[in-house]
Length: 198
Ligand SMILES: Cc1cc2nc3c(=O)[nH]c(=O)nc-3n(C[C@H](O)[C@H](O)[C@H](O)COP(=O)(O)O)c2cc1C
Image (cartoon, helix red, strand yellow):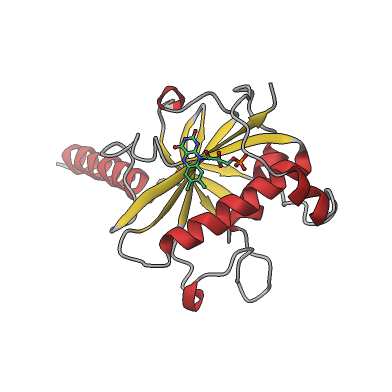
């Protein structure tokens, strides 16, 4: 009798620990270094250098460059949580996905980290780049594409400052349709390839 209670007890604990692991398991997270918010080229130099460049390598950016790039596009630049871009009524309805060799990641500006959303290498769906950013906004938000435009322009100015190539592309925006799940009602409206110049 005692033996069977023990066996059932262990079995119960085993099932419980499996449940705890699956329910509370940490999502795969990639911590970013703090963005460097000073320095770089003067604004007028960056504006003079801003251009779309398609010739780039697929060498990965450093984590520091990635952090700086994402902060430029969609980072928080004030203690009240507002961003490097303006958003209608400060609703901040946008999401930036990051295509890396390790999969597709969502940028979380508050936590300054990336959350893995796909763990497969989908880079072949895009042109060669060190990183491809996917800009998603609510399909029904009349301001959505304005927000995407602000983000890619900020990212392009960071690239100009850092000497990186970048190009924005509407084509390829739906390359992950049905593969990458987005927040409800969101769609990817434009993508941006970024990398070292060839
Ligand atoms: C909204 C938008 C959509 C674009 N879509 C594409 C595209 O699908 N494919 C592409 O090669 N370039 C695309 N481009 C890049 C433009 O062709 C490029 O910005 C334009 O030729 C001007 O060159 P510049 O960016 O060097 O000034 C797009 C640019 C914008 C702003």
